[in-house]
Image (tube, rainbow, N blue to C red; front, side):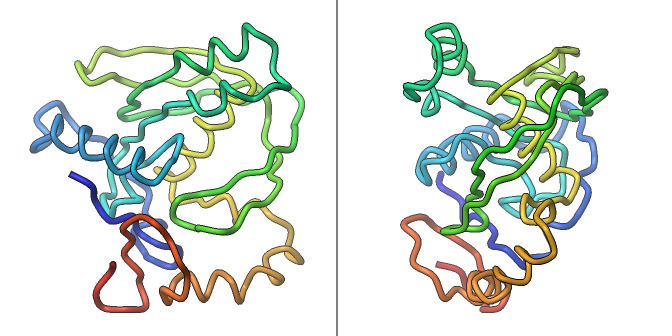
Length: 196
């Protein structure tokens, strides 16, 4: 089932997610719905706060990035095959040089900006069977994971922009929260009673 994505300005996007247990109600159905919602909106990641749930759950499928001709074959293959659910994730370490990449967000449609992030992360999480993993990622994989991880920490990519950039985007962000934007997926806007 496709769920409405929470728009910029909604307090759900500012809450730090709480860990969940394997007994979390209807977890498999929730994850299936999140995949449906993400694919319907042409996203590469979706975090539970983006559908209004303050829990530590996000999912990532980087296959769309695998078509980038600037990447070598190994990188393309790695991105093509990467589809994963992260539950109760905790980034243990971020390292490497910071690099800039143009990011967007399903909760902040029509705004894309360059964001600096460190190139390598180590992350601990559990999968859908609640098996524990500690893994290291770099490049675009690390970036997509960092972006989604920020959501479960109550952080948006716009928080990482300069004060000037934020000021320039203020009107656009206000319009998003009021629903004054055209999107081709279901959204819930904080400044109006009923989402579309």
